[in-house]
Amino acid sequence: MAFGPSGGRPVKRKGDIAATEAVRPPPDGGWGWVVVFASFMIHVIADGVTYTFGIFFVQLANYYGEGKGATAWIASILVGVTLGCGPIASALTNKYGCRKVTVAGSVIATVGFVASLFAPNITTLYFTIGVCVGVGFGFIYLPAIVSVTCFFEKRRAFATGIAVCGSGLGTFIFAPAIEALVETYGWKGAMLIVAGFVLNCTVFGGLFRAPDEDDPPEKTVHLLEAGATSDTCMLRQVLKRSVTAHGQLNADIDDDNNQINPPRRDGYLSVDVSRDQNGVKCWSAQNLTQQTLLKREGSSRSLVCKERSPDPAPGPFYRKDVFYRGSLLNLPQYRSNPSMYTASVTHIPPPHPEAFGRSTSALCCCCFGKEARDAFSQMMDFSLLADPVFLLFAVSNFCTSIGFNVPYVYIKDRALLMGMSGDQSSFLIAIIGISNTISRVVLGYVSDKSWFDRLWLYSGSLVVCGLSTALSAFCADYLSQAIYAAVFGATAGAYVGLTSVILVDLLGLERLTNAFGLLLLFQGIAALIGPPIAGWLYDLLRSYDPGFFVAGSMIAISGAMLFAIPLLRNGRNSVEDCKLPPPISIENGDPEKEESEDDGPLQMGATMGDVR
Image (cartoon, rainbow, N blue to C red):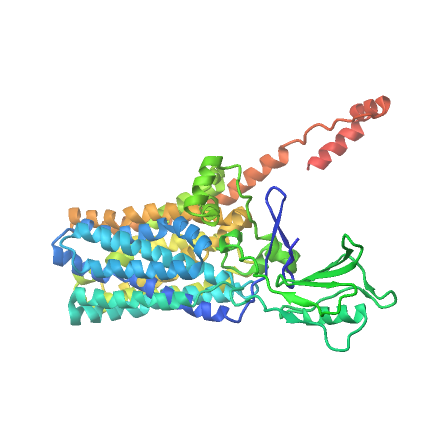
């Protein structure tokens, strides 16, 4: 059985498989802060470009002479594919790691932007920007989240908060920047420069690495110091020299009997004393770096440490909390035993899970690898839809996603129709971005307080967000539009920042990855139809007000329906409490005693009390 470093414990595979993995707790710092910076910059670029696409929307509609509804499909496909390919990106990340997937995604997105410069019509842009850039951003977006959570536990809320703040800051920066680039170089020149920014994500993605990636196996070295004559002295030197950088070792050395008490497993070391087939005593020790130490009785040579490469660390999606962005102090698993937390949330399925047939399992492992298959199947377990609480939350997310992207796409064009300048209309998107950044910090801080109901905060924010969007039709000047943009950005921050925390509150940490994967599908499908609906309404009625009213109504309804979740949870708990335990059979017992226990009223009352 392999043991992890300080706080690490054996990670058992499902089905009591003998094989185990050494799991090391995240370092909570070190190179992790470089990863936070890289994730922050990726959010600045990827989300900044996505949320400011409304500036390109105006240019593309005029350049190709298409209607608002047809042009809006570019942005909707982009966002929908980015979210919808989340399970695929998860599978590839679990197999190949965050770095390779992020670099591949940035290259794909860059190719899509460059190819768009030669698009002869809007339909071509559906594939170059919508599909190609969408897939690229999907491969960038998910590893940027996962890479941070892999490095942090105690400081996870702070680290992920810094990383995701890049989204709002990127919107604030890119909105006026893209407007200036379009005015100077035209939309094609601006898009080519944006492609260059996106290509820089390969540099930031190159900074991603696994927490234990910098732990190479050690070379063969002699461990016995000169002058060590006794076995006890020799073994003391072995233990002293085999201490790794991860902590100290404890070994039970009996000085009186000149021996190590076998077998001894403590922290990082496994020591065994045995005899070979000739009766010669042997000492063997193995530590975390998979070094094997061997000394035979009567041998004159020193103990040597033979190099053996460590087993690769399990993929990030074997951790149940990989999508959790909140403070771990909110999790009972962490509060009960922080030192055991890493092992308790890491689960490696057996090679052939029962959920798949042998032929399917073999095919998946052959084509994509076991790690990819495990991550994909975990996220795409549709049995979770049978849970009424999750189903209601998923429908709410679907409604939210229908209206969520409408302001980002159309607020600039609507402001232009109101007579505002190009700089003013673009700065409305920047206001959404900066208010979104501030709200994520504030809401994240408040939601970590035990006395605050996170579900009510989340639901109330969506209701306010929806009502402000629906009523924005009455904002007739720049000041009122700027106030609406600030309110929308601030309240929309709850939708993005609190989703994973709410899922854990409602469903538990065990089902977070599954729930997050299914939500990405719901959100992706909804994002496909939201902006085109508002565009078609404009083409039909020559006004954006109906589209904003529909979008705002959907967001407000999505928040209002979540107030019913406590009722559903109470009803489910009541049903579970009313279930009686199975009858207890008494074998080989006294018949008279059995009869008295069955008929006695006291025993009946005790049984019902146990049920309660």
